[in-house]
Image (cartoon, rainbow, N blue to C red; front, side, top):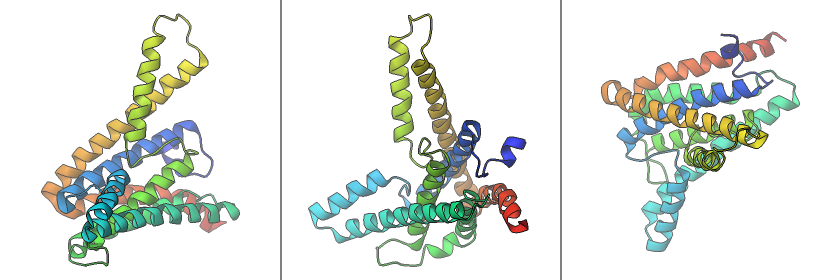
Length: 243
């Protein structure tokens, strides 16, 4: 419980970084998979949108181009807002350096849960509903939170890097399996493999929960997750308010 209370603190430890990363990976998987059922696109996959932008340019398809451009710009803006909030908090010595962007994410998720169905009818200049831009912004914001809090070692909204790390760790373990003594590098590789596996598993489980939640309950299924993130953000925010 003490570790849970300190997940969003300014002072970080490897264990709290991993715990927060796993929670955010579950959250990202849930939003990503659930959003796919509604929007028919994965709003955290910037590689796919970058490829879509290239296709739009090559095929002279303005709709493809605008779709991708809107999602990418929203994701980048979310990451930029997170960095701005974190740097602003650090300059002022706040305890809520990482709680600020996480609280913002929680509030935006609540907005999505309550008004997501309505925003599907709100058109934008990017030929996609406002919901797509909102989810992409949330994913950019969240990915930057995990990266900032862990010093760039943990990413939570896309699993390509985590699966790559896991594969490399397996390769190292295969060639060193005959060694009786594990080197420091091997031990670090084993730790990285466990973290990567935990993040991927959390993302998959979150995806399953999101898909089932959207299927049976609709947009409101994100409200419990948003509430949890908001509750985790309150302790450091409250300390700053008191001081």
